Length: 253
Image (cartoon, rainbow, N blue to C red):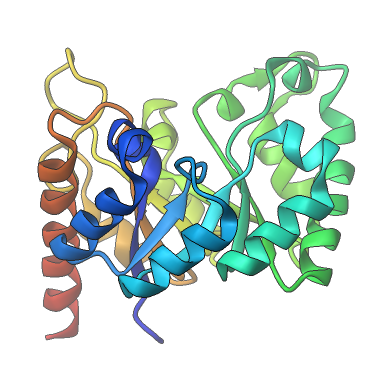
């Protein structure tokens, strides 16, 4: 099996990219990242961003695309991602009104439709979870995540499993990864801090067993580092990268 890439979700460094997208990308390349997952374009045009990525030896593995952009301008979304060289178009979250019981049965069909459009454009559509997807759906006897897994076509809809939010919801991410090995080509890796006063932490500094998680992620193509609340963003993402590199090196030895 080809060793998965390590990428950084740029939401982690959002304050820096808002000020200086190209400079931030340069710093990330200097830390050792070779791939990123986009969360907006930092004020650059799509051609400007592609040129900056190419000049720094970075690739954009994918991009988080808000629900409204998928719904309103899918053609422009896909054209942008093609220009950027992305492999994945990721829906990062659902609006609250889409998660109510009266709406959930229409979601798989909608996601399949977006997945079909992505496939025709040479992209893979993926859905990113938080913890809300694991809450029971009223009168359904199940949760939204299970409904989406069962109701979407694996050939059209992949999932970006956020291990932190799965753990936060009290669900076993390792069991999910083992049971559905081909549904999770992307996983978000951010640790859960032992200190209850903090929500997340750099990979390797919290309580999640990342060696076990990565071992279970047999169908994963990219480990995407992310923190919602970094203490020092560049320091934290460097810690995460080094820890993942050590795990992968140990596994290869």
